[in-house]
Image (cartoon, rainbow, N blue to C red; front, side, top):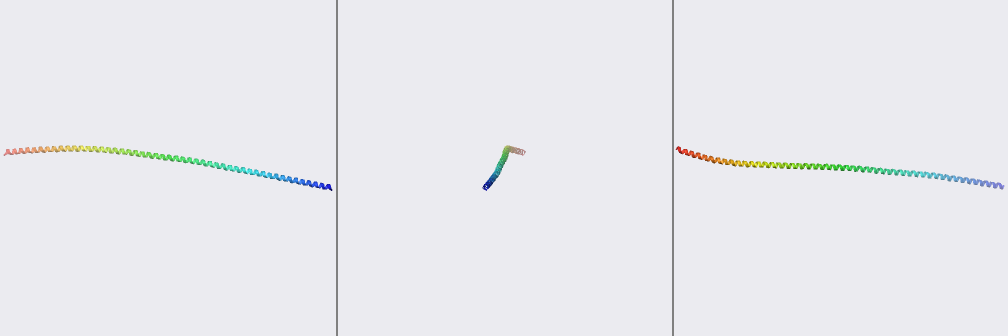
Length: 179
């Protein structure tokens, strides 16, 4: 009976050991499962982190590309504005040059016109002076001829008077002879 009891105790102890071994095995399996889940979780988190980093890097790259494109467009705009300003400045300078040429032409034409008017005036004055000179000469000639004419008429009158006097004298002599 003692042997049975000892055998029973040993059997119970064996069962206890088996149960503990089973429990230990289950505990190890549970820990291994937890570690596996943690590993999967860590890998998942690492993958999410990698994707997030990729997304951030991609967004950063796109933002940089956008900045570069904006800067490129701003440079093109500035160049375009500079070209438009250069063309406008050229157009203004050309218009100014043409206006200055036009003014110079007008001034040159006015100067020629003034010279022409002055020349015409000088010629007119010369013509008037010449005409005046001729008139003065004609007047002097007329006055000289008139003086000559008066002198001639006075001389003729004197001679007529002498002839009348002579004739009257002859008539008186003839009259006296007739008597």
